Amino acid sequence: MAIEPGHAVDLSGAMVLAPTTPADWLVVGPVAIPIVTGAILLMARHETRLHASLAVVGLLATLLCNIGLLARVLDQGPLVMTMGRWLPPFGISFAADALGASLALVATLVAVVCAFFATADIGAVGRRYGFYPFMMLMMAGVGGSFLTGDIFNLYVWFEVFLISSFGLLVLGSQHRQLDGATKYAILNLVGTTLFLTATALLYGTFGTLNMADIARKADGVRESAPLTTLAVLYLLAFGMKAAAFPVNFWLPASYHTPRIVTAALFGGVLTKVGIYALLRTLVMLFPPELELLSGLIAWIAAATMVIGIMGALAQTDLRRVLGFVVISGVGVMLAGLALGTSEGLAGTVFYAFHSMIVMTALYLLAGVMNGLGGSYSLSKLSGLYATNPLVAAFALLLILAAAGLPPASGLWPKVMLVRASLDSGQPWLAFAILATGLLTTLALGRVFILAIWRPRVAAGPKVPASPLLGYVALTALSLPVVVMGLYPDPIIAVAERAADAILNAPAYIGTVFPEGAAQ
View 1 (cartoon, rainbow, N blue to C red):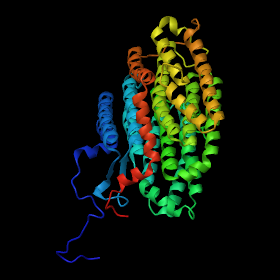
View 2 (view 1 turned 90 degrees about the vertical axis):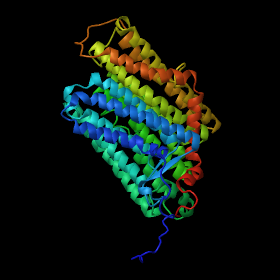
View 3 (view 1 turned 90 degrees about the horizontal axis):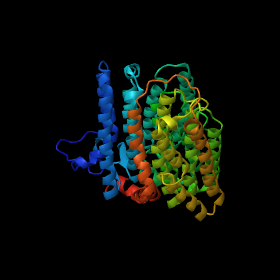
View 4 (view 1 turned 180 degrees about the horizontal axis):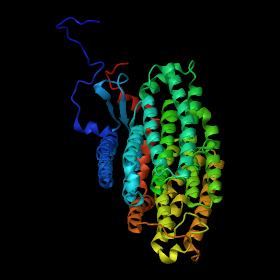
């Protein structure tokens, strides 16, 4: 419709007219910096010797941005920016609350350590075929997933990190890598199809994909809309992304195939994005439907815990052992989702922090052990305590952490989840968490006895490695494991703020839709 010349148009109902403050740009920094760094790496494709340094610098800048973002969110509440200065739901929103900002920070921390370790693990061929650009693109997708305020763009960021992770998985083009990548791609395509189907149904129901807009409209359509169907579809789609039972078979078929630094990044970060998506959709958008499905999710959690760790007990390849430990940890996090209480959700968030760091460290430890012993096979690895006592010390600490034993970080989230289970009248779920801890001790204790404590037996030829870089990386990850174990109060406080962020939907909605925003 034409506007008469000189006629004033009031844009205040649709656009942000005030200037954007520099601090507000923090919310897009964790996505923009990795993308820009990845583009620079592509432009410097003929100077691959510079890739490692550029990637580490880019990730350190992203880490600093995440620290600033989390500090601002904890101080002032959720931070929202909508692209093009449009007010939601007209524009695409980025929304950082305590949950998304804290997970993005921990994910970037482990990525920095992995990029540093990769300087020894990734050779000239890997750099030439794009390891660091793929890594930066993957971290952009992870950061976007944690910080987006729009369901469809959550799907977009999932695709960004899945495509880049596929590139990392096939890097090297060995037969086992191609086999693992095929399984990874096909089964994740199924999950992606479910995700997109659910999102199409969601848009048809609400006419919007902004999460805050959906949350404020849900009560008005609950009687007539298929919200339970939507919740089930998202549970299945994100459960597959998180590797929850019974849709977890893609993970142990693929995570043992890439370079160990790639497996470390995958094992530490990717399944947590699936857990985050479940928390965001089921707890914040569909709380009554979550209550209806809580019993089913509790059984899924217990099955994922127990079957995952039983799979670890049956393996003889160290990388396969760790893949099943990742799955078991997913079950522990699902237990908090099933409980749906403030303490249960805070326990899940704390466990996600812990698992990101510990699983990354365990995979990097496996890489160091392979470099020193010449194999990932538990039948060939032996005698590492006699020759490398520092490796034994790292292994003991990380095994205690993964099992949930003091003085490491895994103790406190399990205490929170066990207590929440008992308070909710589900002692069997508490028993499953404790039993999983015992079985984890047995599975990883077996690794310690065979690979480290057992007297040295004949082994295959050693492969080139840089133990010094490995020790530095393991030290960088072990320090927060010890600090979280000995002084958990600040982490518990952040986890509680994160849980409150998704339980208190009106506060989130009020931040995205301030007074005067279009309805």
